[in-house]
Image (cartoon, rainbow, N blue to C red; front, side):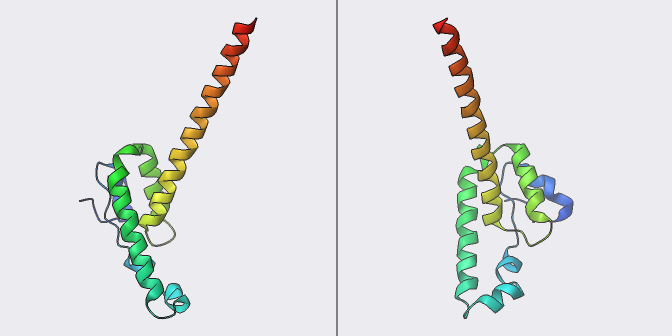
Length: 118
């Protein structure tokens, strides 16, 4: 399993295993407790975090190391860590890269196509 996230070992998260995050403070924050009508919101948060961790475990190797490091840095500063936020960050980087690559292929394809017509 991964390391427990602290600011000192954020770099470890870019390794081969999904890092172990302490999401209890995320789900049990005072703000969430005040918004919750009973424990429903807190339990739903914990379920979401567990589901996100399982999804990350399945796809962790498909994310680029640099994206992992960047996203781990982002989720570890200014608040409590969250698998949901980590997953969102990683997927955003992945989708942005796919869009850039598709756009680059489209440009090179249309440029090559235009040259062939001459």
